[in-house]
Image (cartoon, rainbow, N blue to C red; front, side, top):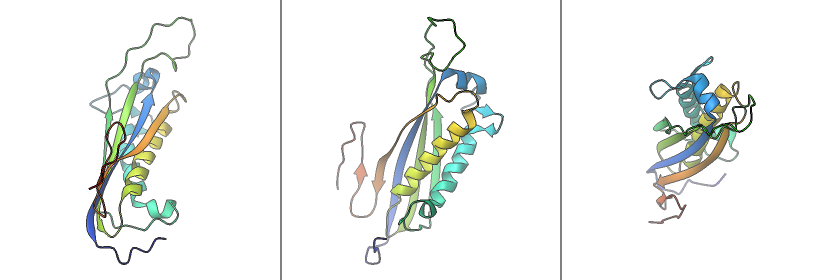
Length: 173
């Protein structure tokens, strides 16, 4: 592990995002109700939020050489973006996976700590595990679910502030 003993204790935050694409057959099967998908295992987004929070709290147990951190807060926000319309089928088959429709789920994980080291890994792991939970809870309908990306959006505290925009440029302050 890196020696953080001489670093200053500062307030630190990290914001990570994962994106999951769901084919329209998954969305239709679980009928979105008030920003939530409900499946046989229960509320999908609510369960993913709990899984993401639990994962962020266990980061040092899962990623070698990560320092254990007493997190001040873990916040997970999950949003289903507007659903794309289906394309008209050219062939008569029962495979709804590649219909051109579907929707993207955005998972934002924001972690806060007052400590000597940052919380980027906690935020990234929280967003990733929330995405995997959505996959697990929807795979009974289709395995064509795509976890498209997981990335750091911003971090504050420590030596520098990092804010990544859509072009993924980095600014140091």
